[in-house]
Image 1 (spheres, helix red, strand yellow):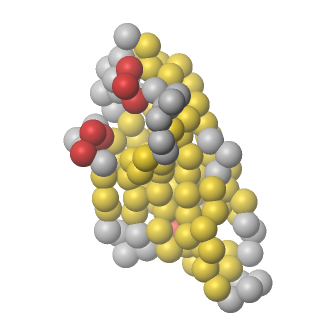
Image 2: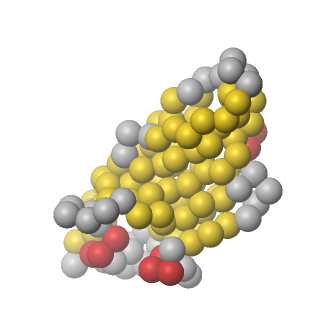
Length: 120
């Protein structure tokens, strides 16, 4: 299973970006899909997560500005980021808990990270 993240870039404060995370491989079902971020000198933190049942969790710092969604038919997750702030600057990683056909069990996978830079 591989996760391919895309959509990062440079944006001015107040702008928007949409991140995508496409999963491929021996996938039976994707359970939870999530986005984490890591800013320079800081620990990786959860930004948002969505379960297969549609339950969503956001970090307090992004509530009302970011929206997580998923397209189960495409095995793809999205993070719509609006009203971006300089403090949102970080490398964003997607994470998925995938139940694999080939081994008949679930495992966690990480994407390669995509850099989001918000200028003031």
